[in-house]
Image 1 (cartoon, rainbow, N blue to C red):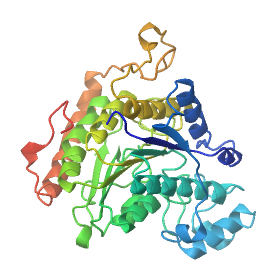
Image 2: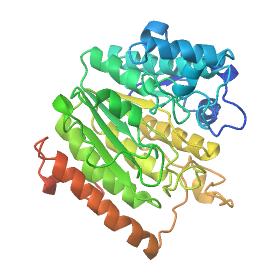
Image 3: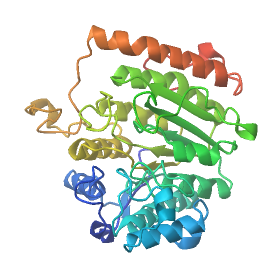
Image 4: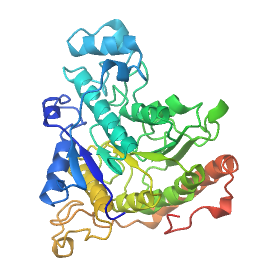
Length: 390
């Protein structure tokens, strides 16, 4: 596994496609992550290679999106927003109309499909496609900065190639568009760990949303209370996601690595540090399966870039120095940043925080495991204990 092949999917063409300046979603995050990896010498050799992104074709986009929706989206991008386009979500506060809305989404989808193909051919073991993670987009509806759903398209592509797919979404926002796509299927297991829909858009993703028909038991939601911290996230990961992944035994894992879970994000209410990313990636590479890593939320740009770079470093060099020899001697700045290294400092958790988070999370985990573990033949007592990934 030390020789695993990593692919970072990127093309300079994407730099010309940006959201409006006042929009919280910043497309520059991928390029900044690339620069960070290059500065650390973690990108550019044969096992840590850059691969060109591409724009998804119209036929590829229509595997998930309705043709009329794509037509209206292109019209809106050209300055012709119709009443039908408004009904499809274009022009809302979190779905602004701008010239690059179709192009950037198509590049994000093409990037994810490129990553999926690299994995399917065995040309990469882990592929990072950080342009998208647009998990809210539906076949004919835009929402939450998401217009074209690269996550759903990548999963459909891999499942269509006969792969058994596990989709794990750790964005603070529930991945409702991906959930809807696979709600009645069992060839794609969807797991979302997110801030509770009681306090955050899209106001859903509750424990009893477990799929229907053939897909009953193959859609999993673990809502986190507002204020949740590292231990809470890791509890959800270890006690729910990891046992289900073991039981499902996927051929490939698709990870939506939204970093709006981190403390200091302006749009969410969670208090994780990027140390959870190390644990998460360590757990996933332990499955020894191809992994497609997608972007997602993350509206504090520096925190998001550093976390994504840390995710890459974790899988590129699991035994390496997390701080590249700098963190221990670094000077803590006034925020969560260190002068050297990629890891956040630990954040203290008060007794009041624990009292507000732990009972609610324990109740959610109990509800999820009682509903889903019997379907997958998992004994509740076999859930991974604290500190374990297996």
